[in-house]
Length: 260
Image (cartoon, rainbow, N blue to C red; front, side, top):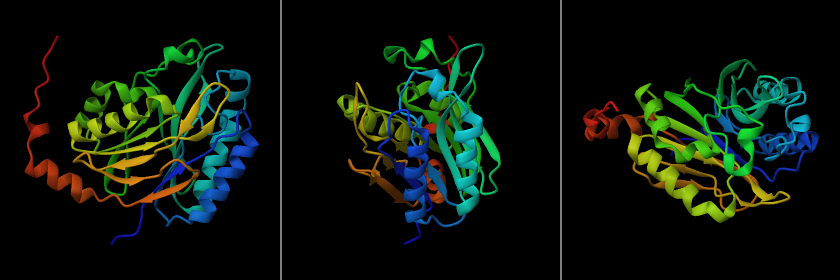
C-alpha cells in the first residue's frame, strides 16, 4: 500500500492562546514525521479558536500565524494549509485558508466566502469572493472553510476550474456533526472528487467539538476517520482514483449549467 501523503491535524485548540497552539501543532507534526512533499492540513482559525475578538485573532497574523506555518513547512519539507485571520478593510478581519510550500513560500490564499452569520462572524469578517486552487501531488486542490460546506454551488464552481480534491478546514460543533459528515460525502459524490474535512476537538466557552476529521473518496466512502481525540490522521490519496471514476462515469460531463 502507498505511504500516507496527507496528514489531518485534529487539534484541541487552546482558546485565544497562539503560543500554546503553535507548540501543540509543532509537537504533533514532529511526531507524525510526514514524508517530504506531503500535505498537512490544520483546522480553521487553528491558533485561537472561533473567537470574534479581532484584537487577538487578527493581531500579528502575518507575522505570527503565517510565519509559524511557513517555518513548519520548511522544517519538514511539506505543504501546509491552515486557517488564519488576516486583516480586512478597516476594522474587519478575513477568515483565510493559507497554503505554504515546502520552501515556506505562500502559494495560495482563500478567503471564506460564507462567514457564519449565526455565530456573529459576518459582523467581524468580510466575505471572500474568489475560488482558489493550487496544485499538489497530481491533484488540483480547492480549499474551503467550515460554513462554506453548506453551499454546493461553490464546490461545483471549483470543479469547473479543475479541482478534484476539496480541503475543508473547520470548527464544526458536535451538535451538527451529522451534517458535517453527510455534506462532505455529498460534495465528494456530486463532484467526483476527494473531500477532506479537518475539524477540532475539545471545548470553547460556548461550544463543544467532537472532531471526526475525515477523508472521503470520490464515491462518498469515508476512507479515514480521526474519531474524537486529538491526534494526526494520516491518509493516502491517489489521483488515479479520481481520474478513472470521472472517465468511467459521466456525471460531470453530463452536467448542464442553466442560466437564471
